[in-house]
Image (cartoon, rainbow, N blue to C red; front, side, top):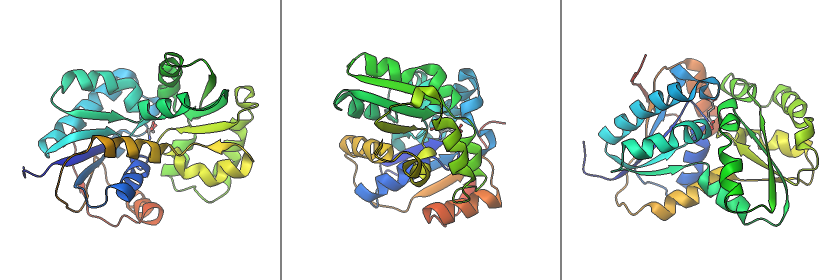
Length: 259
Ligand code: DGL
């Protein structure tokens, strides 16, 4: 393990790369280690116990790699495992992807805001309960949209199919009258074009930028290095999408932490 301080990020797959990309805009060159748990994707359909188990193994690995600041770059893991991770690793600093967005929403004028997320995130009620503890002015309505992650991970972005599926979800009565929409899954920022074409005049909340700003405020390390990438299962499809969607043409090292 080198003595350089590093930021660790993890997600079930590609989604956390939306946070990594936003982070690279404001903290370029800062050493980062990214772990994509593709073997266990999607997290959003797993139990809290399973998500806690996967997340704990990953954080232990990132810690062993020298990461002191961990970005839980997955809403499902933030919702299901965030508290357990903070308790299990008191020596590390954690940034989850929910709290900074809740703080941002709390500063908005009174309005109805929609949030799309995985089943695990919506089931947790994490966004609504955290927001309700600071304001009652913003009416947040969360909707589980489980088909969207598989569509993105299977490379359906840009086919129009993702727009049709999103349109179906946005017809849910809970989304009627919203004036802002939160991508409450780190995969969903990739749907910005589709969402804004369907919801004219509705603000698309730039969640990765909000989270990246929070990370930068907690980062005091020095030194620079290339980002390092790990996967629990490596497929040609994943490597292709990482390259075409995020321009990441790295060596993704296979690192199985848990069957
Ligand atoms: N990107 C993740 C999230 O923010 C997980 C998606 C999934 O694996 O279901 O929830």
